Image 1 (cartoon, rainbow, N blue to C red):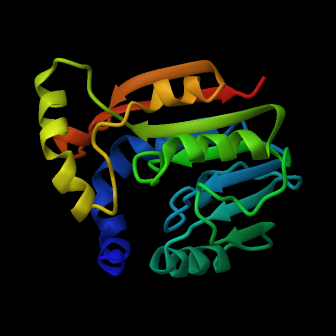
Image 2 (image 1 turned 180 degrees about the vertical axis):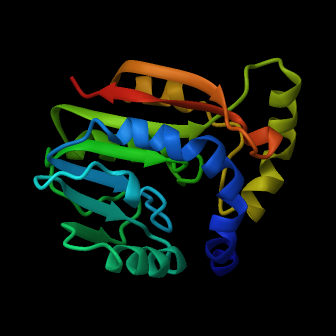
Length: 207
């Protein structure tokens, strides 16, 4: 299943990427500098969107072997890049405490096994005053028809989509982890599957 998801992922996401995700990621990543950690970098969709800065040091994690092979290929095609690849899971980052200025997650919090554990690890590796950039599809508003269908189908969707959850309340989890949300936007992911369209994106700060 992992190999199938890796092989089909870019094709499956092409519509949403071109409709909105590329612009959303580029806008978020325009802020980064210094040491940056991207968790769950997948096939490397964000790589061309980072600002061209000589002082930017980028570390990418991807625990899935099949995704990692595609990511390695994408990184190899970049000239003179300061990029380190790690195969550690989000819940156990092979990174030093307080070693990053920025952490970026994009369509990752829906798939991790332990979201509170992942956010605790992000907190650990961020410097005081460091920032978490997030772009995630999330649960619809409680009581809505979309949310009811998300809850009904989540069990099945997780098993065919690499543990992707349709109904995670990621904003609340970020706040509960201790982060201060500095900015957040809620918008529909255009050309995505209807149950995965609600999204949040923004910036959270570690005090």
